[in-house]
Length: 367
Image 1: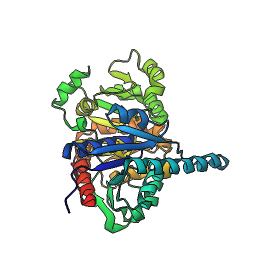
Image 2 (image 1 turned 90 degrees about the horizontal axis):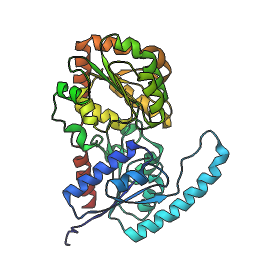
Image 3 (image 1 turned 30 degrees about the vertical axis):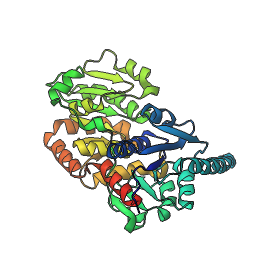
């Protein structure tokens, strides 16, 4: 039988940047392998992917699916109706696009689409970013052909014979910064002879981290350190006002050149999303992780704990951040050796070329 040359690939999932960036990385790697590959994304209507995916040059179809409301159960009548509508639309998408394979990157958007594809007997590959598997991927695992993970010990959630340790694909530009640390500091407008703390709370920002930095600013600055503070768009004005007139602090809603920011930093303070952790591992960054408590199954704390267990990060729980951040930052800034140990250990956990490894698995299933 003649081998099919051009494949049609469905990529489904989203809701947050943590699901969308890996999905786009996989799609880009598929296109590098074969520019003729046809790729269609399926996401949730009104979520971030409906903007980000077309901006990256791919077509996307939105489903009216929404997540279960665990606090107000009566609202789930609408959720079930939306799920039924999504299953019907997913069937239509599958009939019209006729994929050879479907990739689920997690998030509730991937549930209806992958379920329909599996029912039709089309191969599926799942990509799980976190150390604690999401509900959707756990439900889809039995019928998946391959499950690509970023952490060891995922047999707790998935059939062991389907698990492949590939790591999480990250944004390509993160890894290509040609500048030295001093040059990166200068480019960002900081003094190259002084240490720099990079604070990132995710694209929307993090209330706890921002409050904690605001309370710790004077103590950290007293050590002669500088701070690059990514506040997120919701807190931008408030944080800019707090930073105003303080020498050595830059508060900004968004950092477009994260590769330069990482290169410049001596220490990072961050949430513990899977994508961010993968970037920190590949770059070997010493980091204080403050896991978000507002995520499903507390998975950020489990992501952070996986690093702490290997002495590859320091963790402060969200509830303790306001009182502990200043002392932890100061202790690490004063201890070059400790930062070096964290840096070495976190880099040992890095898994390189994740996108290419996942594409290898996709081709195995296709053949």
